[in-house]
Amino acid sequence: MNNRRSDIALFRYALIRDATEPGITKSQRGVLVRELAASPHRDPNGLDVVISRGTIDRWIRAYRRGGFEALHPAPAARMASTPPELLELAVALKTEEPARTAAQVVTLIATAKGVSPSARTLQRLFVRLGLNMAPGSRRVFGRFEAGAPNDRWIGDGLHGPIVAGAKAMLFAFVDDHSRLIAGKRWFHASGEAVHPICHALRLGLESRGLPKSIYVDNGSAFSSAPFARACAVLGIALVHSRPGKPEGRGKVERFFRTVRDQFLVEIDHGPVTSLEELNRRFDSWVETVYHRRIHTETGVTPLERFDGLGAVKTASKELLAEAFLWAESRVVTKTALVSLHSNTYEVDPALVGRRVELIFDPFDLANIEVRHDGRSFGVATLHVTRRHVHPQVTEQVTNALPTGIDYLALIADRHDEGRRADSGGPTSFADFVETQDPHQISGQLSISGSEAR
Image (cartoon, helix red, strand yellow):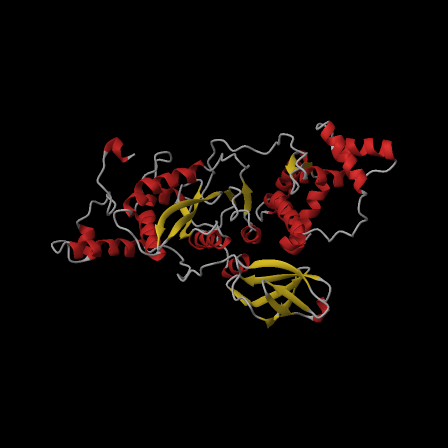
């Protein structure tokens, strides 16, 4: 039930997000709310529902008062179970005529039996059994480009070479407007675990600012609760593509093709022995070659287009730290204890019998903050320790989170390597710079005319 409450809160936040922007006027908000109330929206049950303007206004007021936590619905009172024979009859009626709505089935059952389950109960039943498969009306992404940098990032994963005995995988986020690679990181592939995608996202947020939305597929990492929580805390709209419908992800797929054709093909000629070395080479290639090469569609380099509108919106260190904590819910036992992945913790006795939220760093299960109804009840006391890290994270990233790319240092490293190989070359980095064509990227073939595209 707690997971369902979180799903509902995320749905409500995604619906009202644009209407809560600080710079929006009262009249603009009224127009936006009326448009939201006039259109159907896909709810967490997969149903197309229409939300009234009054309800949308109530969610906006709740979000202003209490933030994301205030969008969680109150726990529902326990209701009497529905007789199984009525549910069986509902399934038979729906199977007999798939076009029948839940409301129509309620009418038929009430006429025949005198009593019927609610339409909402039958809707959930039909969704769970796959009987509610009418064609959807979700938006289809065609050829689209965001209007400004950080309006939308597109995320995806790419399987790469074998490094240190295991397959490496790249997670990357492409800025839709500029084609700049906002966040990127190679990890060892382990079933597309949650931690790599969150780390790659955080690298992008710290170096490129906050996007308004992120568009991803339905892979396990992108559909995970920690990833969704990070986006919600930071005010980022998380949009998933329809299963089997990859429209809108063409830019990141095109970037991955470039990675295969221009970066991975060269790895075979200079094999790497560690992920650290792979990431160092990849960062150098992206920042000194890909970001500074004119894009055939935009007519400018990704770096120039991204920087064209000046400073970007950023998040505070405190907000970033909160966003990338993980959360799980537990019910406090009669002895004021909770368990989390084989560990046992003692909490405030006032929480006995209540469902609480445990907030923690997945790499440090010794420090668990306890919250209830959005209020902090301090740090839980570790009672029994059997695990120090969350089971879904398998490797700790030792590299400190950078604030940006030291472009000159990367070029200097590449020059130093060339100088050691050729003792007749320039003797200093300054001499090296003076000998270069200002329009030529170091380490890149000199190509002119149409071949440059």
